[in-house]
Length: 306
Image 1 (tube, rainbow, N blue to C red):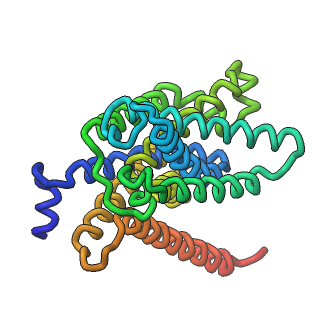
Image 2: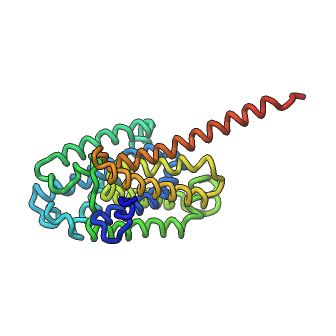
Image 3: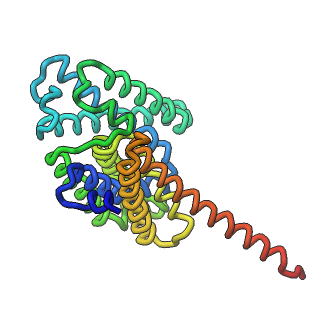
């Protein structure tokens, strides 16, 4: 209980990490809903790795070619944040364009190509993060799941970025949902399916980049997929799915941070603790679904046949 009070205290030395965890936990699952319902969860696996590789690549270019705004000693400056944000987003855009071209030209399975990109992105991020030139940047520590303490500028930028994403989703939620559920009906209603599809991917890319910067790729993957998948079988309305996913994500991130901080003797990485709690919640939900299925099956078997 003393540890909990310490974490909730406004003077807590890791308060920015707590704020970032709550923010990511509440915002990322809402965006992940569009990947889950759109049957594009493979992108939720690949894009965070590609984003992290983009951050590492941008920083590596800055250090190697002595570009002042991109050098690691400026990693808390606004110019550095903007540079890595642009670099990571550009790499994801190129990745999505490549997937589109491959799928259109030779009909190759999107899931297979996405899996290959996941491996390539993870390997590139690890290779660059392990470089002596980027040791002070903290990317390798983020990949290991260590507690990341965002600077004030990074935290404020993340709040603004994710706030913008959620605002756009709220304003355009009707056409985005229509395109998501029935693109043919949306096209017949006069909506630009390509525009809203592109808008969705743009919001996903921005969200993934911000999530990878503050929480790392593995936590980003988990938050995009697990909360929506957990809540979806128990709701039949989009507002309930939005709310339930955000609540589960925020709670898992907070209590995962708490578990990592309390169990310091275990050296439990914070992102691993948060993902484990997400997995536990999903397992409980899966158990409830299984029990409900067995109950309905048994009930159906007892109904007399005519």
